[in-house]
Image (cartoon, rainbow, N blue to C red; front, side):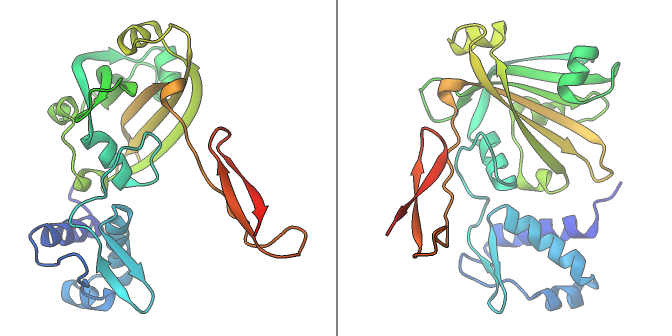
Length: 257
């Protein structure tokens, strides 16, 4: 099945940026120019540009056009991702140490865990995930499941993905609490049954069929999410407040200016 037009246009623009045709700070052609030059609808062009924006490659502002901000997706390691760029960075900056692979037929337990049909076949790669450029403790245990009828096993084994692989997919993310299983506990150097946060990514193709599932088990002491919440207007009506983050709770409390 050929890629839709918005994916093809996104791939073309990414290639042109990587080749240096558009540098950081340069403006891309306008939506109307892209529509006219390729006989595409404005909705298709906006969808393509949305892929690049989600990857951290461009910014779009009304009246200012579309500006290149990076020649490639934004870097950085994020266990809980906020977009395709962070998911790509998670994959590219980490790797599974000595991965073990096999083909599994989903029983009831695995089917419920992955959200797949009982009896479906999956190619599985599992192992400790480590940062490529760090000697610190591994952040998590990963299990990657690819639908057995798909041809991308080598890519899954190597972990060599590109942003163009991700713009074809709809990706969901789920975070849940669990205990570290025995095999993962030994490999991670933590106590069996200790607390963990599990981040699950599900990848759907353009027909909305599930292609792959990534399950990442993080020991609780190696995982945290910190957010700040700003309150633009004082609840008492006496003036603005400034939000101060409280990392231990992952929340914010307002203080008066």
